[in-house]
Structures are given as structure tokens and as C-alpha cells.
Image 1 (cartoon, rainbow, N blue to C red):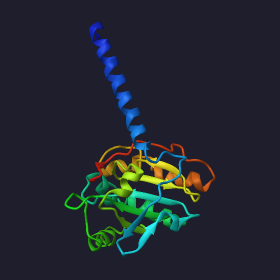
Image 2 (cartoon, rainbow, N blue to C red):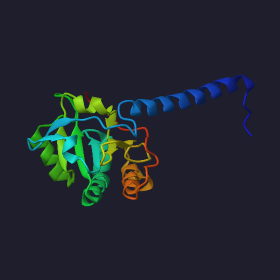
Image 3 (cartoon, rainbow, N blue to C red):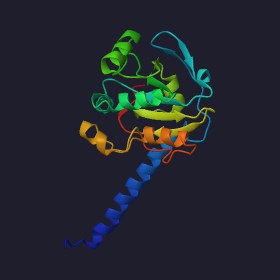
Image 4 (cartoon, rainbow, N blue to C red):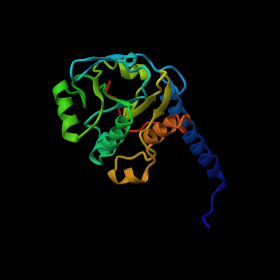
Length: 211
């Protein structure tokens, strides 16, 4: 049995406590702008097809928001594995509105023209209802979007039902996708059954949104 020297115990406790505090801070940070149970921030953004899209357009519908950046390896994980496309397709088939949001500022990773965004959607076989362009970051900041991907689910009466990661394994490895719990799928299933999602708040992981 390894010997734990007495003088090292406070350090070990300190590291564990610091990790716990950091995790708690991340959860609080993730929820600061759009905590579950609160009204979803209103928005009006332009889609890749030139339409003005607002949250008010979808009153009475469940809405999923997906922050995305095609250059991010964590986003690539979920698209290369077809996990994101499958999640989108199942949701939209069930009447859910899926909005992919690009908040990368001009000149930064992930910033694309409408034409480039539509080509990405086609080439990847993605199934969003609309792709929204948010180059000034106003929508992303309103929601407190931290990472790509960062996922939100909004109830038909306009409240945040879920805020956080797409799944339970924080990696950029495709092989981890089948092992993970898809939080978006499970949250949508709970809402369909008339239940609140559990968990409703998780820590998002991925690349920083390029504001």
C-alpha cells in the first residue's frame, strides 16, 4: 500500500477542493445568462437564406439552439460521427425547430458566408431548420454561449429547459460518441413525456465561441 505522507494531505485536499470549486464555477458561468426555468432571451438574426428569424416565430414549438464552428475539433467530432445530424433529424422529424448558430466574428475560425454555411450543411448532410449568422455575437452573448457546441432547448412557452453540453463525454474523439449519454436526446424525450429534463444544466465543452 502506498504511504501518504502527512504533510501532503492538505495539498491533496486543496487540489480536490479547487477542482470542485472550478466545476461549480463553470456550471454557474454556463447558466448565468440563460438558466433553466427562466425565459429564453429574445433574438432576431438573419438566416443563411436571408430570412429574419426570431424566437417569436416559433411560439408553441420546442426549439433547439446549437452553437457551431466548422473548424472546431469538438464540432467535427459530432459531425464526422454523424451524431449531430442524427440528433437533428430525430428532433426535426418530431416537430422540433433546430437552429444552428454561428457566432464567430469576421476573420476568426468558423466565420463563413451564407453560401459557405449552406454548402457545409449540404456536404455534411446536416438537418437544421435554419442556420443563423451572428457575426457580432449579440445572440451568443445574450444566451451566454461559451463553447462550440453549446446546446439549449427552449420549451413551447419560451422557457429554457436545457443548457449545456451535447453529451456526457468531454472529448474530441469520435469513438467516445457511442459511449456517451446524449443530453439533447434525453432532454427532448423528457419534454415529450411531460417531464422536466434531468439534468437540465451541464457544463458545455468544446472550443471557445470566437466572439
